[in-house]
Amino acid sequence: MGKLFSSKNKEVLFSPLSKNNPVVVQMLGVCSALAVTAKLEPAIVMAISVTVVVAFANVIISLMRNTIPNRIRIIVQLVVVAALVTIVSELLKAYAYDVNKQLSVFVGLIITNCILMGRLEAFALGNGPWESFLDGIGNGLGYGLILVVIAFFRELLGSGTLLGIQVVPQAAYDFGYVNNGLMILPPMAMFVVAAIIWAHRAKNKDLQEN
Amino acid sequence: MNRDSNIYTIVYAAVMVVLVAVILAFTSQSLRETQKKNEDIDKMMQMLRSVRVIVDATEAETTYNQLIKESFLVNKAGEKLEGDAFGTDVAKAFAKDGALPVFVATIDGEKKYILSMRGAGLWGPVWGFISLDKNKDTVYGADFSHQGETPGLGAEISQPFFSKEFYGKNVFNAEGVFKSIAVVKPGKGVEGQAYVDGISGGTITCQGVDRMLYNSLDRYVNFLKSNN
Image (cartoon, rainbow over all chains, first blue to last red; front, side):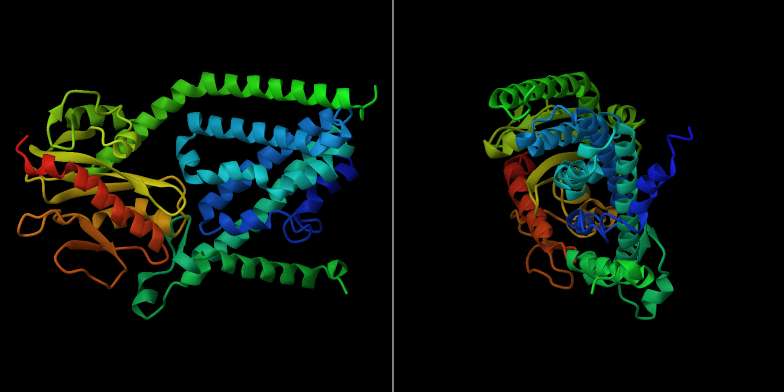
């Protein structure tokens, strides 16, 4: 077990949560971070789906890495990701119909999530299956963390609810409080991402660029 | 082995594609039945919601069989036809002027007619069921579904607060002319027909629902006016 969680592997697993976060540092997957974060629930399910898909795609590509012809490696990666996403979507349709209905088109959009291609290209092609699996889990969670934070603020300020449960009391509305409709629209997700990056960079001075 | 040779690349790609195709075909085939069952149960729940009955997936089938005993198809002229109403592909029927399904539910001893609706939202299809009292004019309940409308905006049409607005609205005006029910921007109104408030930020979806109501109910008008 000691070898499975060596300090290098721990680094692979945990660094995407902050110092090497796919969204706020690597700038990957920003597009879907805008699309699915109007409500907390789809954001959480999306985070889990991406984590599962990126982890397994990493493992598969890592196992194939010594056979893949260099000139068609992007195509091979796409086929693996697309097949995996299709299988996940079919399984959801059969065994978790409600979740599938909520995610609808977003499941298909996982295929085009830049984090997947980014991690396959940057990590899985050059590392063993176990490290690649950890890298996938780490990056999926790092992505999910940002998604949940964005969705938390957008749902709270935009709809006054969290996970669909009303949290802003009726009394506040009676007093003149109004939900910020702009929060539900995609541009505000961009501002929230920017605010997170600001806070993150302020705390990690070594990430600041001059 | 030379991994950069053309032959290796072509063979590699061919084998990979065939392999993936077999895996996907196998997955799809083996899950087909469970998926179909889920879809049917979902459809039953939608229909039940349109007559104000809310059940969870495990009880949907029994409740459906208890409440909805009669179903038939009607053509554009309003004539009843025999056929499998539940299995009808509504999207095709609307596109090709085919016969549309009508389900008759009995709620507290009163007959309710459940009609099928289908239209287009912002990102994809929207559909739903609307139930009318036995006068075939007053709305008893409604339920809306969508494939991929924006969460928090257009997707809100599937929420109960939206469908509840339709309760008690009339499809025909006082002179008995078909008018449908309009979905308008909150705070606005229309003369001479029943209307409900749309959803702020979900304007295009709401316009889609508005058109869907008109186009779908329009196809049932002859049936609604008849005594069938």
